[in-house]
Image (cartoon, rainbow, N blue to C red; front, side, top):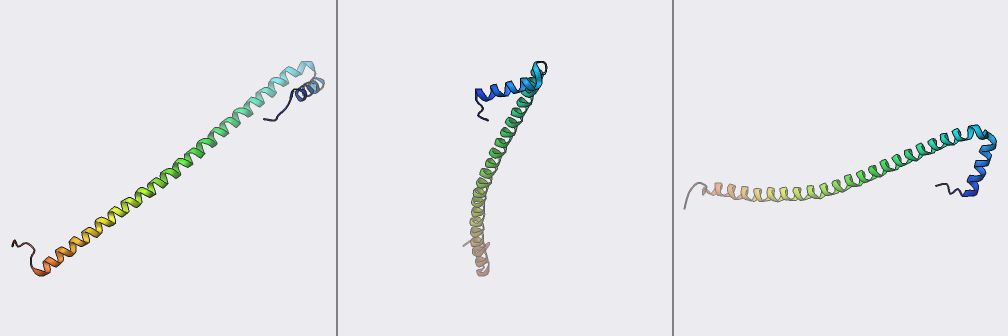
Length: 105
């Protein structure tokens, strides 16, 4: 993550020992460990939540695209049915005008 080598850790440890002293160094190390652990958990939670949101958005987009395609098919079917109904309406109206409706030949 930070690309810290052994030499850098050793120098930080020596400086912490000189500044804090041998009595307070273990407590400070535990507190630092807890803080780093909490930060890692928070970063992991944030990353997993971000991944979930991205996947959810991708799924919404796929569903929207699939819905648009399905909607276009339904609209085309309805238009076809309406055109066919208009043709039958014309046939019925033309038969009414000629007087052939309801009579058997």
